[in-house]
Image (cartoon, rainbow, N blue to C red; front, side, top):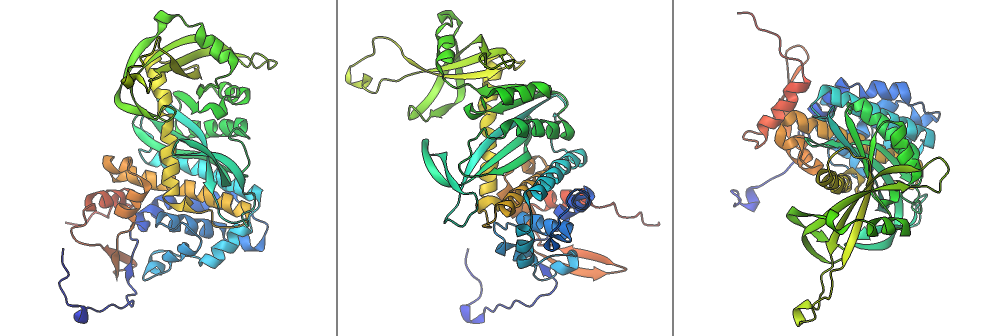
Length: 468
């Protein structure tokens, strides 16, 4: 590609009042309006501080800014340009939105979290957001240590996280989140909670899991609901919360002496080989693993806790330890293995249950999506403001996911960054005509024109029939 005009004959001027850079925000926020996001906020969010007035307009502005790619409070100013005031009413300045976030209390954050859960249920009712949720759905719970810099962030502290397979201490705040997915649908966020940086993964997990299961049922997960988690959530309270709510569980078991004894008691003939369609990288061994063996046994967990003992399946995967000196002629005398145990009451057969548990890693894709978007920063020094920012990021994620489902099958599973680039960050020129009519003139030959129009047509009333 080569520039057509010479430098001396090329000019630029920021003077067009009818041009917008994010025309895709119109159908996205129209979808939010159809689900009555503003009404939910007015009904459930009550802020005592005088800076908390017009909460619906301010939270909607934050969500719209995030959908356009804002990852800080200052970036929300991207909404105030060109003809945006002709498309939207109530856009607030970043300084106003920052003051609003800092006026929130923890109770207000919990109210916004409730709005987020109710909104995702309405999105699922209006769009094909979670196809197949009535048959089987997976609720994944995990935590992430979000790095912060400096000492001004309220609640920040050093917590464990993994970087390139190694556990390290990182200063930041801890994000607890739950996602809901099906074999046919990409994950949506059903719950978020911000904790101090020193908080363990399982802190408050019992109540959070119960809350997330209720949200999943409201979204339409009326069939088999399997709650998946890593070893941090191998706790009696988490399992009890699943059972009280009628959900199944699949949790990585901690390799304590009792688990090791149960694994050692498995008969040698019970192991059956499995082959992975694609080799899996084993972080502990530092190599790619093309196959493994699995077996299962019955196991009673939490027997020492009064009234909380649970008997279920213990599914074990073992991978042969490779001798790094075998190439030099030092062959092993006998095979040795590394074991990975899963405690579950999954109704599926052994191979399928073990494979489904490994798919718990899908929650990491959601974390990566958030970090690549609105959660690139926790923008405030105030803890409640950052917690509200996290919840708004979850609302934005679900809104974009629903938009992608309306756009078509390709965008239904696309990342948030892809949806923003293809469907939101589309320039358009506004033209008024008739009685209150407005037309968005978008770029000709836009590669994703059909997908954009699918969303636009889905969220707007059909045009009135013309007389013959």
